Amino acid sequence: MSQNSLSDHPMRQVFRYLRPFRGEFVAACTWSVLNKIFDLMPPILVGWVIDSVSRQPPQWIGNVVGTDDPLTLAAFLAILGVGIFALESFFQWRYQLGFMSLAQKVQHGLRMDAYNHIQTREIRFFENHRMGETMAMLNDDVNQLERFLNSGFNRLLQLLILFVFCGFVLFSTSWQMALIGMIPMPFVLWGSIYYQSTISPRYRRMRETVGELSSRLENNIAGIMVTKSFTAEAFESQRVAIASENYRQANFDAIKLSSIYVPLIRTAIAFGFGGVLLVGSYWVLKDHGILTVGELVLFAMMIQRMLWPLTELGMTLDEYERAKASARRTFGLLATPSTIVDPPSPKPLGAVQGEVAFDDVVFRYDHGPAVVNKLSFTIKPSETIGFAGATGAGKSTLVKLLLRFYDANQGAVRIDGVDVRELAQTELRRNISLVSQDVYLFHGSIAENIAYGEPEATREQIVKMAKLAQVDDFISTLPDGYDTIVGERGIKLSGGQRQRLSIARALLKDAPIMIFDEATSSVDTETERAIQENLLKLTEGKTALIIAHRLSTIRHADRILVLKDGRISEEGRHDELIGMNQTYADLWHIQLGDLAAPRPSQQGVEISASN
Ligand SMILES: Nc1ncnc2c1ncn2[C@@H]1O[C@H](COP(=O)(O)OP(=O)(O)O)[C@@H](O)[C@H]1O
Ligand SMILES: [Mg+2]
Image (tube, rainbow, N blue to C red):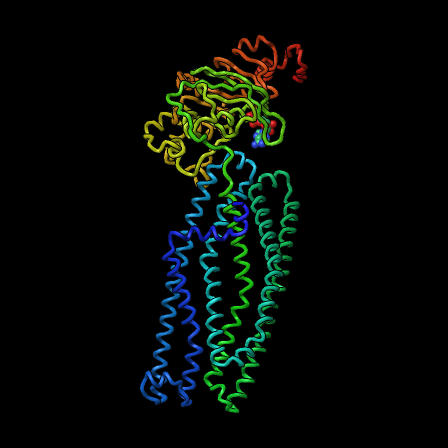
């Protein structure tokens, strides 16, 4: 039901955003109407001037000025003309300012609502949508609506006023002439709408091809190292040539049509114009009392003023349609709630002990196979647990389940015995410090990146954490030290440096549960050892989950869980697992480079020793 009314009237929702500014909106509309009326005055004024100097002044002017002297009347009308132009300009300033400011307010409100809503969406939403798509919703659609409120809406309003006002003036002057002048109207209307429907797919194609071209260029420049190293310059040049040629073709298709449109419409309008001149002159000459010279001029000018804007009607309607499509997308987005939501009355966690339990958890991404399959384990408070397993075994997925980025299909994930689904998400995540596999640094200084989420942190705390993460030495070599900007315009960091920054960031958060997901994979073994020693101290009294591909990282963990096919295949201390001589032992020997003496394997791990 609500979905239905949404698709019917998405624009109504846009106007809901105007509600708080109702007064301003009415004012802007009033200014716009007045502006249009004053804009249409000059033809009338010219008509009066001509009749006055040809000694046929309209009655009221003589009454107002109190004389029939043509020069005095002309002077009066000239002053009136200046006044009209001044007022027209004044109203234009007012309505432009009014609509602009309203459009920006609506844009701001809409953008913030859309952003705040997107922020609440589940991680699956972001993993399933391309970033460009999400950005388009936040940017292009919101801007489209701003554009419509700023100009399209005003154009529609002024078009309406134009019709009402011109129609009234023309028909009240001479309805016969008005009818003659309007003969081309159906053609202009039809032509304009037909033109719009024909040109818009061509414009769309133009936009698409220019998009393809620019993304190809962008891709190629970004991947220039690959192109050069594979000597694929000719191949890339060819691909750019094709994209560029497509764009040229699309552009030409559009121009072909658009260049013929105005001349055609102009011809149609000419018929109305010519008809008015011909019939009008005849009536003036024959003096049927139907028309004065001034009225003839008024007609000739007014008809043009009325017909020309019609040529824009198609464009204005198209703009409206596009705004509607944007509104539908934006409000569709706003109407789709997150699939991961807080319970109605979340349980408080209080002081977290740090027990983490997976209880018979089954999980699959969408309709894929079970990545986690009836998995159960319990981590006691302040235990340090290592997770091992091949790439794709599901280690990072466990992290996502624990942070409730995803919900388990079956079973439960518990912290201190409380199902994570019974907690407020912020409370859950506040108690977990994560160094994720994919390090993300925000544009900003190194200090800001380490203190992310902890704006109160002092410089001393930041430096302390950087020291523990073994990154202080490096930062000290930078000219701006902790104030160095990372990101596009700042320094380039190596993978290991980025990882160490993100470790410092997680340490500063100081949560009772700490997760390191391949946090030191790009750090050299020497530095890793130093970080580990610091971590041992730091994670004391905390629950630590350390996921590592390099097994030396988790060698000293209290317990190591080996993940295989979504379950735990082995469990124990390092020495015990080596003794078991299974997957873990295999991995360990491979990583040690123990290739010379492969252990007779019951699991078929054959290593062909080539050295
Ligand atoms: N967002 C996702 N959508 C679908 N499949 C995914 C997604 N993320 C990971 N997977 C799949 O789930 C499996 C486990 O991934 P992951 O937990 O990242 O493994 P690990 O961290 O152990 O290398 C892999 O087969 C991977 O392809
Ligand atoms: Mg992983």
